[in-house]
Amino acid sequence: MDGVIELERLNSVLYVSRPVQGQTETTVGLFKVVDGGKSVCRIPVKLGRSSVSVVEVLDGLRAGDQVILSDMSQWDAHQRLRLQ
Image 1 (cartoon, helix red, strand yellow):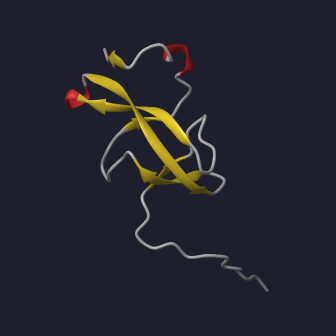
Image 2 (cartoon, one colour):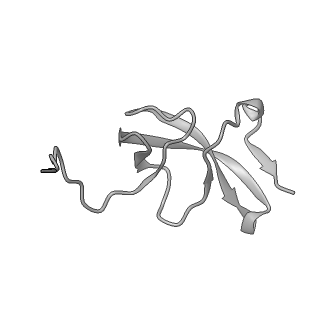
């Protein structure tokens, strides 16, 4: 027999796949796609609770925003990048 144990149910939560540097209850700098996909700019994103694969977004993003979740540490010195 299988069963599910529900620890907590969160309704109406904005979340993203867990970024490389995304830890629970921290603020991270993520690159958000802007200018119709022509560039990205770094924005602070406050993260909340997380699971293995996703993390809650508390502030900094809205539904529909696109961000880069992969390792962008080589671009830490830049606030804005042009996409080609």
